[in-house]
Amino acid sequence: MDSKNKILVPVHFYEHPYSLSDHHPPNELVIYLQSEFSLVLYCRALFAKVLSIGLSEVPDFLNYQCELVSNPAEWLNSLDNLIRLNVEFFRGRQAEHRHFIFISQINTKRHDLQLSVLINNRSYRLRKVVNGYTEDREYSFNLVKDHLKILSTFDEKIEYLQDQITEYRQDSPDFICCKEKPFDTLCELEIIRIEKKETIRQNAETRKSKKLPEIMNENKIKINGKINYFVDIFFQLRELGILDSTPTEIAQYINRSYVDKNGKEIPISTILTILDPSRVEKRPKEGKRFKLKF
Image (cartoon, rainbow, N blue to C red; front, side):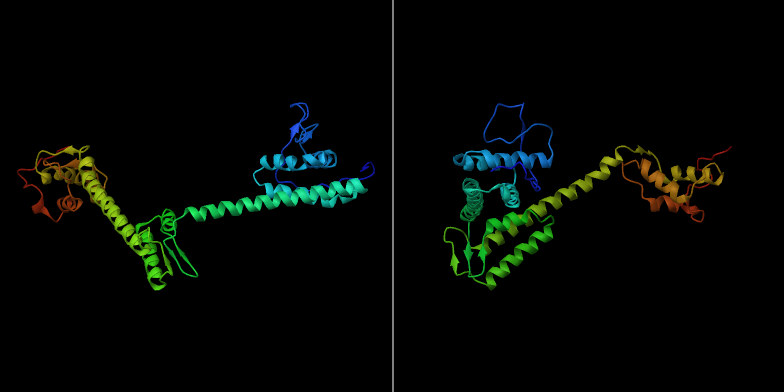
């Protein structure tokens, strides 16, 4: 295993757990660096561990390192690649045996990781309730409810559930779980539940929209008199050139700022009619209006 004349070929590691040698007590399973991190230094320290660690400790070393990374399979692939690209370091019977042990243990660890994923997936499938299945498809209402969480609108949810019912009835399951209600019945009940929630939401929105004008009107000034007398003042101010505003601007201002004696909103159309120069009959008679003089 003499490596004096050999140059290590580094490989890329997406994750590289290590410790600085002077920060922790020695641990055979830890990869130590003498200085700040660089990928080359990490590969050298890791490969030195590969060449020196006791063969009985190889499984523990791989397990320990895999627990430190978020993607153990990816880290193992990089280690496998590092060893294969630097096979020249493994010359001689003992070195070749070490090479064989490491590659074998890496493959074993990879297999264990894959098996763990399969077991977890299988456990999930066993936990979910299957309401029925055919040769080509499983019907699980639990999965339907999970998918409904992704959909944002009422129409999308109803359409999805109706599609599920249609597909279920067109392709009747070979097996039906007797402990659960039929899949299509559960979907129909879910449609009823969603429709009730939507009705409640719409009623709440309607009540809110009805209350909103009342709340807005609370902040407006009440006119305790005839509206046409009040609006006529603005008509005169505009005629005299004191107000440089269009009838629409005046109407929007009055609508926004005042309410009638009953606290009701003053329609813009009503205000515009009073401000119309041709609609003399809508304004107070000459002897009764508030006469402005400047």
